[in-house]
Image: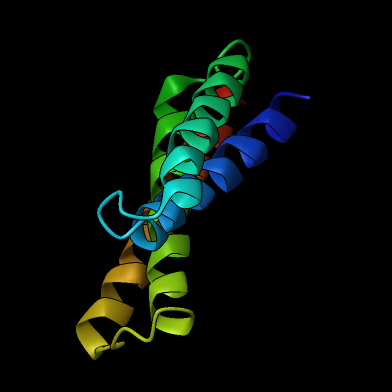
Amino acid sequence: MHWVYMIGAIAFEVAGTTCMKLAAGFTRPVPSVLIFVFYAVSFTLLTLALKRLDVSVVYPLWSGIGTVAIAIIGVWWFGEDLTWLKAASIALILLGVVGLSIGRADSAG
């Protein structure tokens, strides 16, 4: 169940960050309120995931996958440019997240 909490925490963090863009500097009420709702749910689920998972794995996964997801949403949904440097940086973030996950598996065995 702790991995379900982790996935939910990432999803709600991404939704909250997306709402930041949609809120247009807090000028749009619904996305402005949803920022706080989604982040509250995300932090709650993150805290529940931390009951069983290592913080050295949970936080990098939450922030790294969230960062990659937001970068992709920015390009696809908001029409932001995808440069070779952005693409390479996204790949490095993913590589780091995978490395931390593999490091967790190595230390468990």
